[in-house]
Image (cartoon, rainbow, N blue to C red):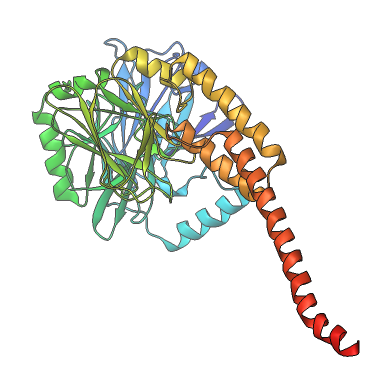
Length: 456
């Protein structure tokens, strides 16, 4: 976000330039500084750079104590600032978010893209994203540009807060509308108290909460920006999470360790239907083609049991059977793993131990199965594999399908039944062959007998 050049006139005009990918930069001599300068260790102040609209930015001097020996450089600057600090001359240049090297491109590709964009595109002012806080930070983003939000150095909107994930969310502005997308964050993204899963539209000036405390707001023009900043001043500076958000540490909860399931954790609330599916508006979004747009729902009932309904094309498996479209599983009050196929699972956990166990088992479908039952199923599967060694490919395929159904609790034939069936087939084929042989002999006898009589 900033290019900062340091000139040292007393050291033979030595200079050094640093690229800082942060909208909020602290320059000083202490360990707290984002850019640490050895020559500033003895100075009782640090320099703070804050992004503003477009190419504008704010410079502030933070003094550790009251002192007269502080440079008078506070102010708002356009594009660049020349900041003399006694033996150091600091030059700060504001950079647009789209003129940085992306994590997935080579330096050559980045150079061509940045040069083309710098020469053909005007520096954006709006739309913009405001990071609320004691010192608001404003980042302008281009339209139709996916701006990443998080703690990582690859993010365009960088927020250094512990409960914000490295790549927490993404903000885009398309056709006059803002969109927020949670990128599988640990502590969630919330709009109007509702947790975001997948991608959803958000109205301008609507607070978007990342984790427990960090707030960002999207604006389209100066009027919305002014109103948002004024409202932020009037509100209590320390954010107190709503009472319902304390449920983040409570149960029952749906938990998934699958990479394509977002968010990774959703707490159930009484009477509220949690929708799982491929549609972006689902409470838990699963990005796989075999998942239906509305695959299933999970609801916590008034008696603290859980109701699961299936609406899918391919079904939802659980340890005990398969729910097909229209099926319901009522009265669930113990931990349960839902299997959506292709290794995608989600566990219904009723306490912390359930969740720890599921995560430790890496989302295994058999996490909550009894150990003896797991051992028995392993032995059964081994027997099925042994039984397939002498069978045809078609029969092997049938057995493999049966193994899958057995693991889901369905009644399937035993391996020896396939063997006896095969013996019956062989005997039947032998009988058919004998019958055909006899039939051929009879036909030949009928044809040859008159000829034999005539010749005699």
